[in-house]
Length: 162
Image 1 (tube, rainbow, N blue to C red):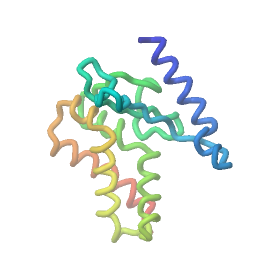
Image 2 (image 1 turned 60 degrees about the vertical axis):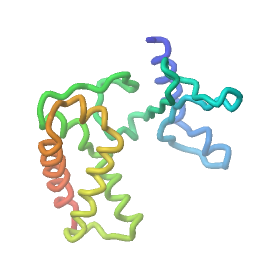
Image 3 (image 1 turned 90 degrees about the vertical axis):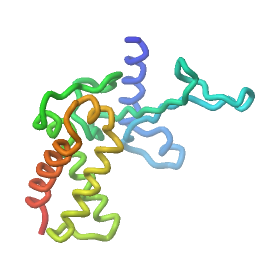
């Protein structure tokens, strides 16, 4: 298992240094990471992957693109947080907050107080989508999670909003 994790980390770091997929289009530079998944066998009409044959998928991201503060680059299990403050510190990262600003720009919205709800909704949904494992492992109620996440994201956003 350790050898497999080491390989995942090495490949992820290589992609972060330069994305080989983008390079095929003549684009050089920083890559985000890799998506790993089981494959579908057309011959047997089954997914090849987990012990039970179920399909699986996960991401590994380089340090410059991580939206979560984790103890290791590749983790097989999420870090367990003990309280709201630890959860918020883990998932409401500077990288994710800046990505939220980029999403507003993509929608043609300015970084202003009137767009606070849109920003907060994106942050909340991104965390739900990307960090379901951490949220579930926390043992905290969904309401407590949401209150803590929104409070931290709102405070940060209002400091940068016009």
